Length: 386
Image (cartoon, rainbow, N blue to C red; front, top):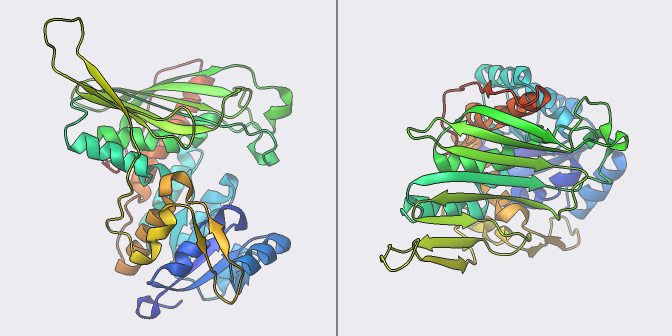
């Protein structure tokens, strides 16, 4: 492995989602080499050629045995996350993993144990915690514009028709981190208990090998705040005629922010005026906001990637278009991971924080399978990303 003095060597695992992160690591001033790993020789050749990646591996085992790579970013399918994370951490390398950290509480603990035994950083790459909309909502909260929080809710609805077969039968709540994370972070609290109900009946063609019978699950989480505070989270992957949405609403006694109903539009911000005694209820102002980008702490070389841009890869590869998906969060995630590895410190979304935003969805699905039983969520000892 290269060591910090000569720059960090980063291996991206998974040529699908991985192509969105290759230019970020290639452009980062602290990264000296970027490699790509994929089990498909065709995908490895196509993406490697397109992004000018010359260091390539057809298996993670081969890559870890090579003696190279200080850090590994896992962008492989969900079912591989746990075992690949254990392998990377066990090799002494830093590990970033796409969400979720795990899909069972036992596997959450296995990752936590591996992180504790390891010699380098772990980070769950939760896009929602770096999206411009979340950072804007946090600014409103910190400025007092929302006032005292009264209610939070969020939904991830997506049509998975035509997706790979491993998504068939996938429990929706096992993928809840994109919604749980911003809600508990805005509340500055952990999810303590949950009641979750399943809705609908999953058609046989969508069942797959799992035991999940629900196309949609909706949960109410009680948060461990001094005053009662509830967060509602809904996940739907099948049999719901709704365009893709992945967002949250937050309501306070002074103001509120609601995610746009159509992806790509601006969120709506509400502000309550003072009661004047001449009318019932306070006057409420409504504004559709063009959320600004906040580039503080992001290396200059990554600034342009928060929005759609073009990029010329190394080694004469043809120019590519970078979309800037997930609210411009990808550059911030890559930058935080690299910074943690370079400084030899824990990441902002380390194992404990990752567990605190992964476990609620796992327990929520268990609640739905038990007919809406009220279940406690493990306490991992950290407020997630407040």
